[in-house]
Image (cartoon, rainbow, N blue to C red; front, side, top):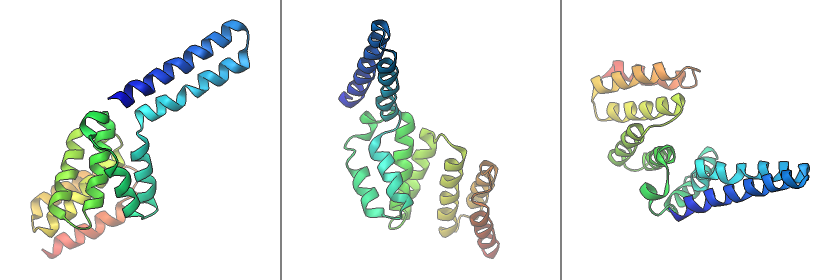
Length: 171
């Protein structure tokens, strides 16, 4: 909570400095301070630990991604709603390597909280479909796959969806 207030305070301070510089006739300095305002605003909207965890996840460094997520002590009070959804999503991805039940809980929580991008929603539903398939819940897996297919507008997960559909036919 204090971090949120601090970030907003810094953004207001930078913006105020920018306005003051415009009034004083220092247009270049004013533009600099107004542009500098974007940094604390960006960090308010996107938590730096989540950004680092996403970056390490892309590099397949699960241990470092887990460390950054573990550094967020109280996610429910520290993060805003969108950040909290991605926190749950990342926890689900990390835990999916070891504990499918816990990973399923994290993914469902992420979807309920509200992932912003359709591709992320499709990925979460695809993961849930794979988990349902491994538990022999064919109907649930089929519905999750069709929802993931609808959400995947760019076709990024086309191959994974086809692979899971082929596995569904075997059951």
